[in-house]
Length: 95
Image (cartoon, rainbow, N blue to C red; front, side, top):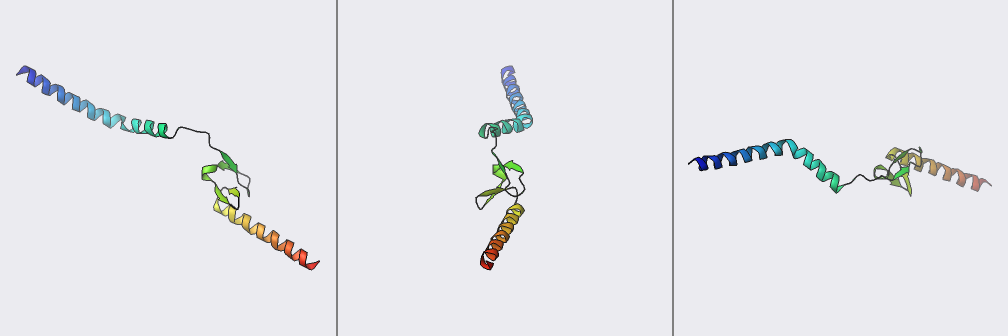
């Protein structure tokens, strides 16, 4: 009878410790798994063609073969490029 009670006590203690371990160390193990899946790598930096600021390539907006820091810079670039093209066309036709 004593061995049976001791065995039950050991099983309960095991489950109690397992629950505590899972509660306190779960986030740590998830963090470790994520860091192993995606090790810190140097991110390639690109320069915004419009405002000349640097940012990670993964966050950049690619348009017309150039990188931009945001959609607004890409729109401004297209507007300025269209204005320059129209000036060249107007100057070329007046000569």
